[in-house]
Length: 230
Image 1 (cartoon, rainbow, N blue to C red):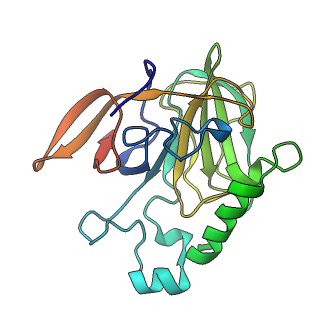
Image 2: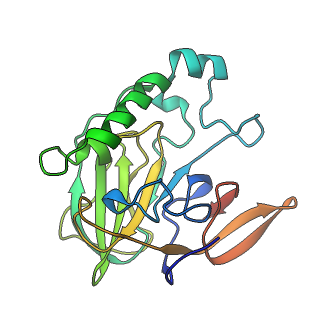
């Protein structure tokens, strides 16, 4: 794992067991682009560790491929999201309607369109970010929690939050293949122009050799089975 700058330390923004399929612990830029402040961004999902391929959904693979899956059939949809730091809410955008189910082909087409044709000067950021919260952590340090469940945001602009406060729920809004939390630190309130900042999590556990081991100030890889708050 290679981080170009000293990471900013924050609290893990979820509780329970998680997997990060896109993480700076595996590659940088973690999402294949530096756009929208995503250089060091994380995606978090919950999976069934006992099923082949670690699926994030309860339905069978053929059903997922042919028919898709309803949102409540994903393990992480609706899970609580927590403030990763003390700070002030500077943006809280809700009301963007989630698609009722995932469908691989449709979602791939949607992702392609957003990747190649999104114009920040004229297009609504919510078509990509969906429902999201931005917390000002410090001078030129902002935490973004993205793709939240419609109607789940519990905070408002100018509200002060404490690390660990519940602020929303994991959703599937915006440019999302499946319910997940997208999390990033950036140097500006404006995702359209922000540069991503490296961050690590002050504490979590990773499952290795049949036991849970504590990690401090760590950056998980895309193979790590991680948990926090249990």
